[in-house]
Length: 94
Image 1 (tube, helix red, strand yellow):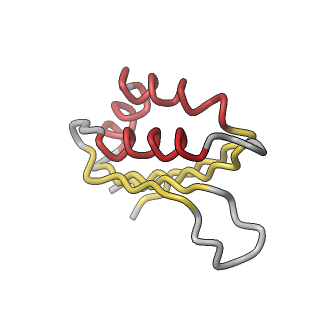
Image 2 (image 1 turned 60 degrees about the vertical axis):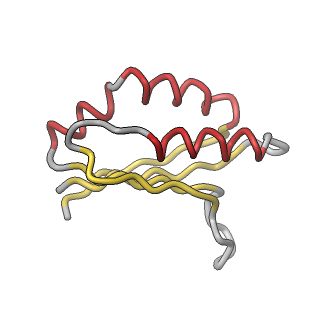
């Protein structure tokens, strides 16, 4: 199984309601081979954390590629981009 981890640092003054809508769109995605997707605001339990986290579990590398190139996913990425200062990603095998 592949776990895709994305951390988002939002632009100062970003529209938080808009960000929550985008995260909900991500959570609603259904892509073949995607086991689940979780997205939300950082809980603030430790100083210096990123603002938002997105975790997607996928069956295998092929499913990850489908997820990465999915048209709806890329449309949502386009909506997210103006709100973002920085993004970090990692894919790990679990």
